[in-house]
Length: 211
Image (cartoon, rainbow, N blue to C red):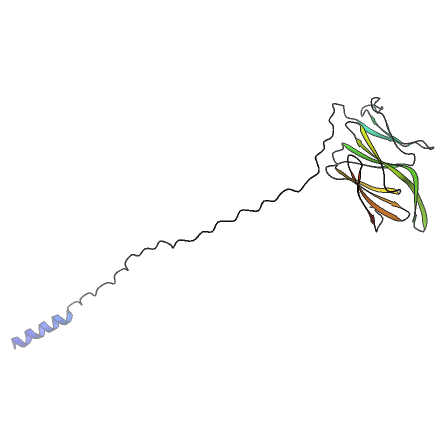
């Protein structure tokens, strides 16, 4: 009986014993994680752009003269018109400057952006065209005058068109001058060298260049 009881206790203790711990999973072996080498391609150099030819930069002659105003005198009775500098304080003409003599039938003019150059078209004749069912006559047969204002030097040139000059415009650097003229219901655009007055290009227009 004691033997049976002892064996029963042994069996009970064996059943209540803690289970043998199982083996823990091992971390994977370290491997070489260095990134694979990348074949680098060289960036092609940016293409170089050669500058286009530009007109030779021309500067206006600088003088030590005092500032002055320009006065345009419109003479009636067949007399020619004139432009001359005056003292801004007194309004009197400056005797050291010869007046720029223009035609007797009026003129059109424009200044460059810096005010150092003045383009004047003086009319010696007459030009007529139709308007609102009638006829309009204005100055024609113009002559171009390019005035270097600080140096008070002028270059004159004949126009290749006979009509009235509607519009004048200098390029920003005053290297070119454009004008639009109309005569006998025909319209022309002409481009000049802004210093020599040489005619560089001309073409006809399909509209009146009045605006």
